[in-house]
Amino acid sequence: MGAGGDTPELDHLRAMLMAEHPGIHIMDTKPYYDANVFNTCEHMNGVLLTLDA
Image: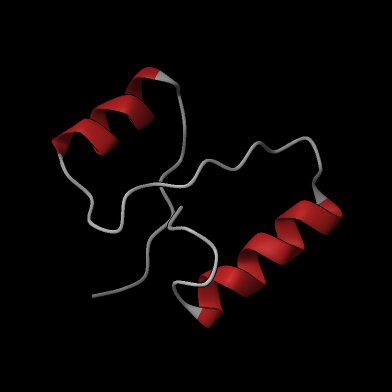
């Protein structure tokens, strides 16, 4: 997910996940997603959280 402070929507989601689901490990990504970000997510069986365009 994008780094904290990037958007209020993701900040709220981050806070909720951290409070209610402490077993979920959140990793910050670069501000702009590229093929490496998508590939890393795929290889780690992760979920990439983004905002609608």
